[in-house]
Length: 563
Image (cartoon, rainbow, N blue to C red; front, side, top):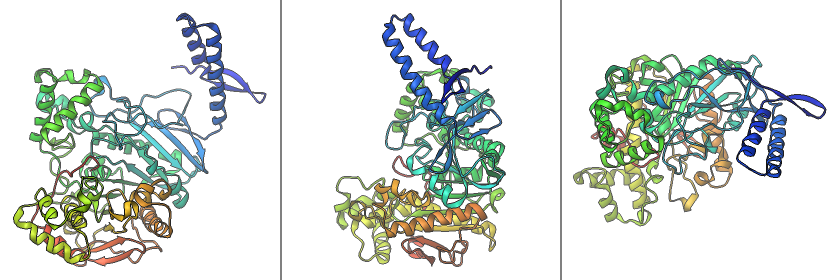
């Protein structure tokens, strides 16, 4: 396809203006619709003014990828490229199918705005960007492109379970980390919920054998794009760290297990998202059958799902998961996943890939902390609420064990600690144990817990889910709802966590001068870095809680929409 260019003049110099043709066509269309000529001329002038602003932006850096050239912007001394495509649109015949490389293009595209995000419910986790099935987008922050340097690459998978979220969250802005650590940082969008994990193999056979895990395959395609293109942005394709929190940690977990991702990354961080088990094929197919019934589609004609309007399909899947009690997510399709990621064993093919795994001490203070009256419960209320978490016969022992380690803790704090262990911390501990069992003394796994208590809401959220994000992204000023205003304590937290993540990206070891000695996790010492102000290392710091929780199987999903 040809790229048309019309010259305009700025400061006496001719510059290309690919938008001129669009302005001309827009004016002609307005005249054809009967819009008064005066209004047309006003609109044209406004568009020309906007075009002049874009032409001024045109001084930004240009990087050539395998599919075309993108122009970025320089913000606070960092080169930023937003909304680039790492995969083609998945609409129409591409829906439920493995991702394809993006279409090549001529000319130079502006990478100034975050691209479309995956279709999802509007809410706190969704961004302000449009939602569409043209959502396979990547954003890159780099100190400098095209300088021949090979910097570590940090590839971030956003949170929101497997159903929501966007790589455009202000908390994920990479500017500070790039400046602090001389790295290239990327965030992505990928397919979610029914668009990413609808298993049609039972209805349509081998042609749709991978339909139930295309959201995972999008992650693989993003890593392939990084391998093919990141050198042009100053990154090292042979030193890629994948990391994510909550649902992003779950995505990292399945990448450690999936064969397609093997060799595309070289270290990983799982933050509050150890996803040890995926859905069985029976569960995933049952969810698809419910969806077909809801839309009155004969299973023999299940291909018709590819033509259901995006909004209608989104609404139908929300009703289906509400009735079923579980959601569309990765499953045992017999192709990408033939066994659960970390149960009963850790995946052998990524056993030696360095991994950091951890949690926050009071994870569910985020998801459950807004329940009416939860912060005022007494011990009777604690016992009543714990019945949803464990058998009634276990509750007295649970309260005794957790109260022993926090004698002054309130009933609400005990509730958050116990439920967080059951839903998050037990899984993370099992993940570290499975790696230690597989690797023995040469185990490249490090474990942490955020124990710093936020002053937000009078401190009643303690160390909640997502409280690590402002620190390890060095974005405390953007994360006041989790951390409160910047303070000496938040600076200590940012220095210790951002420093650890950067050290790990560079060397595959999180040790740096701002931390106590942090050895890998083993089954004898069980070393855990407790991120607090100041940070401290502890050996098996939660032994009683850990032993109490060993009676329970790991959980596959967690309460709330942020898991």
